[in-house]
Length: 180
Image (tube, rainbow, N blue to C red; front, side, top):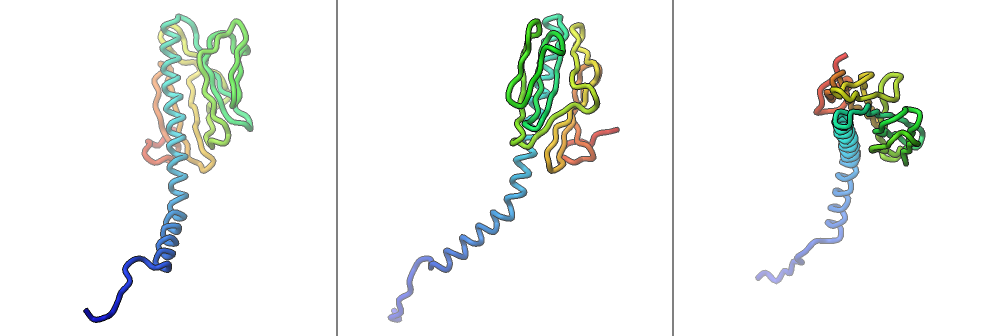
């Protein structure tokens, strides 16, 4: 032994430097993490719509009735509803959907504005219909799901009710670019 006594452990300065470095790394990673979460919310909203669309198509064929999907949006958010009956008998907002007789509400989906995901049909028609014979779609919809940061995912249905997903100008990594 040399008579020298060395302290074992971590000093306060070393601890503070470590904490500062961890905070700096978290600060750098936070925007990327938030963008990732927003992308996952966007993909989840589009996936839910795809499932509801296919369910509505099956319901039209099974029930022998035209099934409609109607969209609405305002400052509080976006929504859509799946229903049978007259178009004017149903409505929705970001909190609730409602139909008056003789229409029947089957299901609805709501995206409040604070979730930062908007959805709306591209074009002028807010409602489209799935026919009872083969589940054909009229008019053929393009549903746009988007974020305030410019990420977007389109759900495109053809006349026969087949869906495909794409991202305009490749704005969403991992999805094919939409063809014009």
